[in-house]
Length: 277
Image (cartoon, rainbow, N blue to C red; front, top):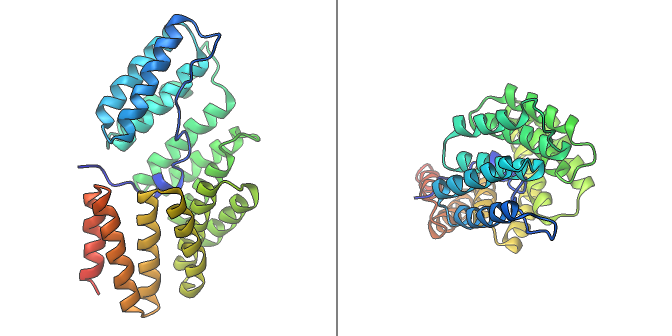
């Protein structure tokens, strides 16, 4: 049984989504071994075997530490934390990230520091600690000066604001992401955030357009976990508008998607939505 992906995790799922260390011509033998382990770990992660992924990322991390490869250390530490998070072990994920962020003789590349801080924000968001999520997403933004992860971090900052009860700020951050990137995955995350923020403001009709656009993008990308989130949000919007038939249709589609993807928790959540109509 796979652990259900939370909204927070999906919102920034592209953050280190492919932390696979490629084999560069200048890599030494130890670094090449670490790269091979990283790639095996990535495959295990995609198959939902988070325990094996964590074990392999841990081996790759130790090899990179042995040769003081700062980029390899950062990539594999971030990947290890992500595997622990996906496997439901938030405490282990925090320990890995705290170790990466601790001051030491080897400097962490600024973009990797920002990603580590963002990952901690995600963990706090998963734990419903909006205050700490805001704190760490702000740290990530400060570290991410023009880094590639900026759109994902902006969306994460907006989702933290939404969790803290500030949908206006969430809308503002979603807008910043949409203005900053043409990446379909990041735009879908920002559009979903925009729709959910409008739902929180009671703007149920206005929420339909961004949620529908997010669904179209996620379907094009072939991402079942995000399609599920879009459908569930659309169901809630239709329910608030009094359109029970439309709400039932979206809940039913969400249940089918999650069941087909092996997400038992998601299927049960959608079923509860249907039962509550």
